[in-house]
Length: 596
View 1 (tube, rainbow, N blue to C red):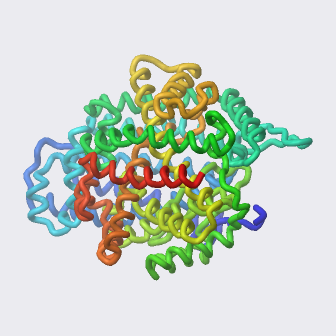
View 2: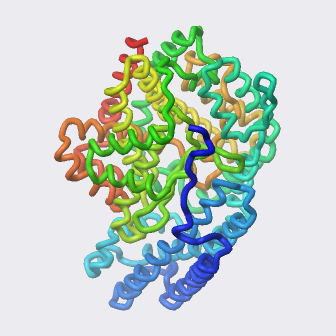
């Protein structure tokens, strides 16, 4: 399907445009509502105190705060997603960039309110509050987590200052990274034609069957990152420096400790998962070595990692993809089928790659049970799988919509639960219906993704850990960042890749490093392996699984990961669980080696 026929998402159902009276009115009202909420907090004394006596007035104050902040968060979430829909599809849209900046200024106050509420909850007897207030019991996990987090807050004045400085600090560096990379045009000569391509389009050449073209695009990509490396390194150093400073001032032993808390998992579960992953590296190397043999190579270069194998010759046009996804979702349940049909029918998806549009794919909640999905679709099963993955996120959002806003906050570790499950549904179905050549193609695509999520993400985690260690003493140069990335890739891929053909600028290519959310990598591994474990449970006990799955998705903001996993008879603190999930990937490796 030609790219000109690929859909753009429909945002007109929310507002006619950024300059419409409807949007301007709601935007102004929302910013005013933030100020009103600030006044409510001030009047009720919602801030850090010495230990407070829990009396009727304190309980009433908590209940009023909940009633005030839930609708405000929901309104702001819709406005943020609406503005973001323009910024992410056209970073040159100056009007959208201006509205985003205004929104972020207002959101600073909201961040301050959240810090005040957390500090206040740390000042009261939370157990007594839960005992005496039915409303508090509806938010039990939020309340108890806030009490724990309150131990890691600076003084109220310092928290206010940190929030006010973020738009011109880490937030500004993040915007610089996004703007620079989304507007980056890379020269590439193909045949007799010279092109200037957006980075997102250039990186798609990694999936091209022509090795010489893959290598040419890889060289052009590295050269482009080298040309822009100085401002990106400045952004990296500044963001990581800010994270380290705030983590230290808040009493965290490290950014990783803070990350594990924010992702609702313990060190024991994390260590078990990472140990099981490292045990599996030899299996992934066997897969990479088998792929190299298929390509007639002694060893893969970085630009061969995503090379297509198998020779089905089939193209997955967008219309074919949507029909296939609907059918396979329908095999699971009528509810999931209708959900996908609605997303396609109501134009929730922006699929066309184009200049100014950000790379990759994501899903964001919009309003009520609606989401919006960004992808950069190309006619391969990989894009079909990505589309199913993002629809899984949207389905998760639709289940969360039954909860009040404060109970919808889902850590990244659990945010991948439905996406991996839906992606697996589609992949397993495709393997049942296609010929052997395409089975190789699909199986390899699945293993390629699993290798990225387990092996490459471990390399990215090791890199970030090293950056934090060195950044505690001083800033890192471009050369040092590249050296750290090479070392992490050698440690994880081992002898499966050519040591002189790695990707030293992966730190520039991955936007996750430029977020204030540290270690934005390992939760994807958690999500993949947890999702595979749930799919295995579905295969064993389909009726019981379907009876509890949607409720699990609706509850991911209501308990920590270990507690929720126990509902599905899973112990995430045991290395055996992670080994069992990785065994499903090992079985795919064996099948791939046999087929090839």
